[in-house]
Image (cartoon, rainbow, N blue to C red; front, top):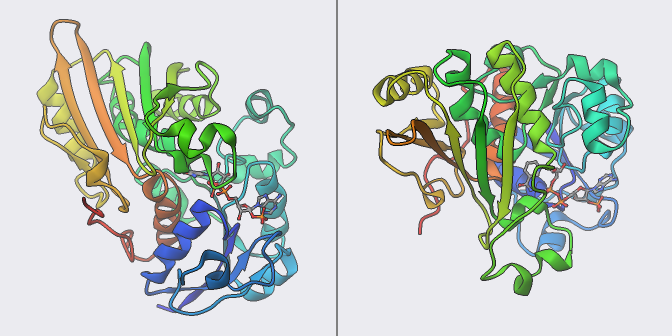
Length: 346
Ligand SMILES: NC(=O)c1ccc[n+]([C@@H]2O[C@H](COP(=O)([O-])OP(=O)(O)OC[C@H]3O[C@@H](n4cnc5c(N)ncnc54)[C@H](OP(=O)(O)O)[C@@H]3O)[C@@H](O)[C@H]2O)c1
């Protein structure tokens, strides 16, 4: 194996920092570029106040020529809208791109425009991008030069749902996704509604029936079902720093044992997805700091509903960990290379 030089675009945000932390434990990559428009000139340790890497990197402004000269792969840890421009510039210079934003996740440019309220400027690249839900699209990711890393809520919801929808083991209608996220899911930006006194001791739903992860989940479930799927998704903000807990309700077409077996078999060769015995409830504390998704399930015989429970760390499996897992696939390395499995617990 040869060491691959990587750029972290947006190294002063939460997903950028998480990528640096994970890169520090990865034996085959070296971060050669870390960007921020506002903090250019400082070193990473001057900005963060600690050293995320065992070597020093000076922050630079995001410049495609500089990135192309210094790196072979770029992780885009920047807001949607910004990422598509940067991805196009880098791809034209022969750099592979793993984009953590939403810019390449929705295959239909009209759907993107409706939900993101701006036209997609690179529809040609949209059709080329591979949706980076690692366990579901391994083979396509291995051949990709542009990976659209999934959103955090979609990762938590789709890992239990896609195999069941694909195999016809649940009804592809009336799927309810009720999910809760820690505050780091909103990024590092300052916002009154995300400040300590507003979030601590509070619990709230937001963007009810209007969250932008809805079309992303629907696109992937539609692909799995082979026919159009609609989901009702309600996100909530919880006073945690990290973590997503998704509770999903669906009508099963078979029994609890068969559903458990199908999920367990589907993920038998997947190092980061753990399917728990029926009735065992996963906790976000069990996945904090790891690239794991843990899935529980229970059939409620009274209502005939299947309840799926899925937990991830939004910054790891929901963002930077999955991005690194995708790089491992792109490079032909072991899928779990350099990725943590043991939680930071308690
Ligand atoms: N937080 C999560 O749990 C999570 C999970 C999955 C996916 N994501 C996605 O990952 C991306 C990054 O999220 P985050 O939470 O890390 O955000 P964040 O904490 O707000 O950080 C954003 C980073 O992007 C840079 N940036 C902002 N605007 C830019 C621009 N116009 N051009 C170049 N760089 C720019 C910022 O530095 P400067 O402003 O100094 O340039 C900063 O380093 C977003 O698209 C987000 O939706 C986040």
